[in-house]
Length: 112
Image (cartoon, helix red, strand yellow):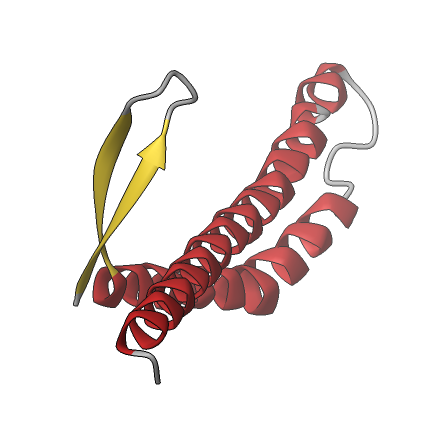
């Protein structure tokens, strides 16, 4: 089901944006699967990997410090997916509000 939304750019003109609600739900579900995978498997294993002290001395110890930064970036990935999912929810809420406003306008014009 596609919804058309008219967005104003503040300059007096507006543009039409077509949104497919079924696709938005699919995107939401895929994001949820990724987030669940990150929470269930990636995060715990990344934390365990960060606790391993394979090199205790020598030149390799300094080189291995980069893994702490890499692990932090993996954790940022989860935050980014959660943010993306939040944006999808915002879009779906906006669509529902627009649909409700349109329905109210129709009822008012039909004097129901």
